Length: 274
Image (cartoon, rainbow, N blue to C red; front, side):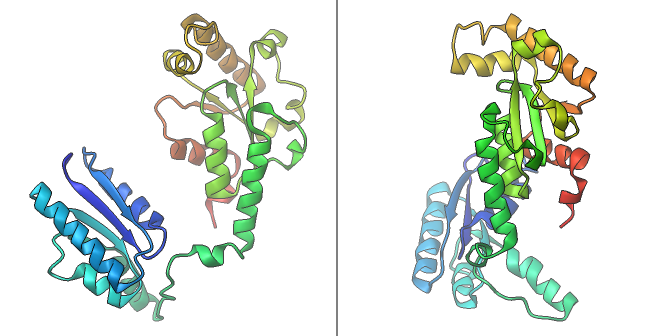
């Protein structure tokens, strides 16, 4: 599998094909080479993709895997024809057509979903959430925290920033994040700016050895990255969260998606239904 190539072919951005395809490929212990081919919206582009697929098949001696999300029948026919030497998995035909039968209506057959998304309230809310999360990253601002949906707390480099941005981009969550520092531990309580919003707080922690490794890449041979200091900060951070009654989890072996889903489940379960 490691020498296999996987194509994601779409008449839109290809994000749907790649996301769905990757969720399927994750069931296999393999890391094939990924090739995304977006905006395949003409017969000329479709033939060029088929030619590329066939060249890879000849070079690797086995057929590439091809995930497609193509609305145009004319374009799709070219990619799914017998002269294409890939294993073509048509997501629309697999899922959309059975749903047309079940619902008793035809689908919109739209090319992508982003052209109309920019006009929707949901899209604008998501952009606003991204701007909020960027403005409140790493404790940069304590203004408007009453507008925050979630406030992530934890020691530096425990995964707060990527989680905040993921929550904003994928779920439209206004997520601020605040790094707990030694001065907070010496005071023995949450920073004053966070105290009124403790109910919105969720904590991230991390294995000290992993934290030291991450920090060493950022500031090698510093006290900040020293294992003893990382152990101290992690222990104090967890102690503070327990004392303050803040739910928390370790980011050490969890993906951003798993962390975000856990946070939503615990603090904003309403955002898991839409």
